[in-house]
Image (cartoon, rainbow, N blue to C red; front, side):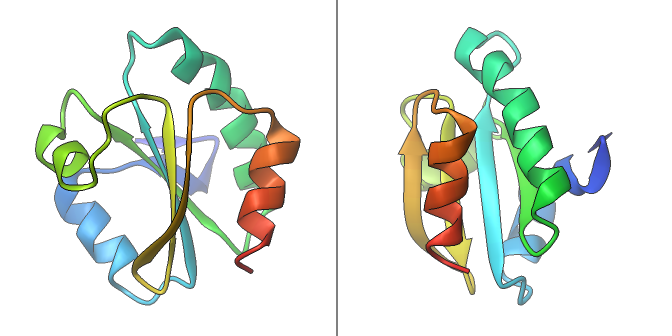
Length: 110
């Protein structure tokens, strides 16, 4: 499912493995659930960041549909943004944050 542009999309576990392990320099993974109010509030912020940061790949993982992946990365609270650089986790933000904090954190790894 593509959300607003091809930079920010919901992916499956197989697609996740391909995106994170396939040489994308920087990937931000938004672990969320449709029933999570903070996740819903964060969604338009992530959409805006995806629109403005073309050098970063943004993807969404629904924890209800991908419990194995959420478990693998120890996602116990959502929303959880995990930043991967060259296939390795370099940082994560747990909970709702404003766009400025998220953008500043991402830019540290560009």
